[in-house]
Image (cartoon, rainbow, N blue to C red; front, side, top):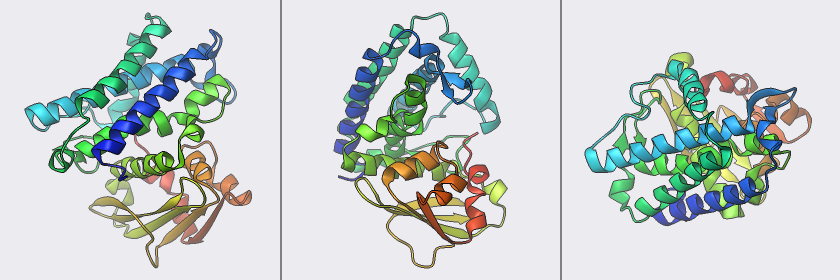
Length: 285
């Protein structure tokens, strides 16, 4: 199934909800206060789930506004520079609430998204919403994909770190993992900074071997970034990952590019220097 078809989006949203429900049920009180980065750094697990709840509600509101009221503004009028403060404010607003209530709210949002948008036509999925901090409008299909990929893959290792378990994406069926990577790369392309790229014109090809893997490519120009599935002959930079898991760990900053190369989790051909610029070119905030 296509990563952006109604059946696959609905099925994957519900699977993400199921995995998170099981994940929440297995947590001890101590887990919620554990930090999600080494050396007691980063958000705690509780804070990360609070962030997921806040973002999920905004995705849902934006979908509703776009389909029922016309193009809306994701996160209102916020710019990228405002996102860290917005995240902190939303997390702090949930601080007095029991963690069980925050978890239930997040799961209910996933369920409502799946219920309300389960049967959208291709035309509806291609409608666009204006997102001030993305480099182009985001389609309804991409918004729905983000609702599944943001908790399932973008934060799939972060929450796992806070609980001392393996990244959640390792529980995805292989076909779902492939779709989630495709959606993640769309989010990554949307987060490209043309102003940082300047006059850069380049092509990137990514591939991952084994279950869930595949091939994708991006085109970078002064006007922005586009992504598609498939190989691309003569790419400026080719990155080939040993597995879909290695790709996910590298792109979610669980595995540094240098370590990925040194441990043969990734092989690179072409303009390797471009690879070390990717963190700045695609940073969401």
